[in-house]
Length: 204
Image (cartoon, rainbow, N blue to C red):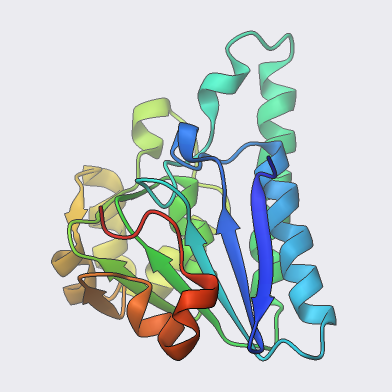
């Protein structure tokens, strides 16, 4: 099973994080898959827009730190993962096509950077947002330290990061983290082509 699914319908490329068993946490395969999917969308002249979503119950639970439990070179593996994640975010930011992001369940850690690299974010009702980095003693990656202040403003971003307390979907909208809150985050984005590229997971 691919860590990232890529499909195209009606001129819309749908990129889906596809590690639902681990809350779509970022590992090397997912980071590389995200970058490659963004590059495919950029090269395809038939693609006019991109939708990013996540399979399962959560959009992205952050970096897959648990995967390094048995690593013989934890620092080296974490660095490799951070590089892959940053490359994935950079590839989407470089797209000259609009990127809409549908999030649900939870968005944590690296998931915030992955989300904010899009142009418009729609959150399902009940979605929780958390920085998470203070709990594991790591600096933000995937562009999060830059993208959060751009979305929320410096003071709100610092308070969100340093307090490390979750924001609800409505609070995230009020603070500029997302554009809209909907019962089903995919519905406002996918429109008439929804039956062809509907995200798995939805708001459940």
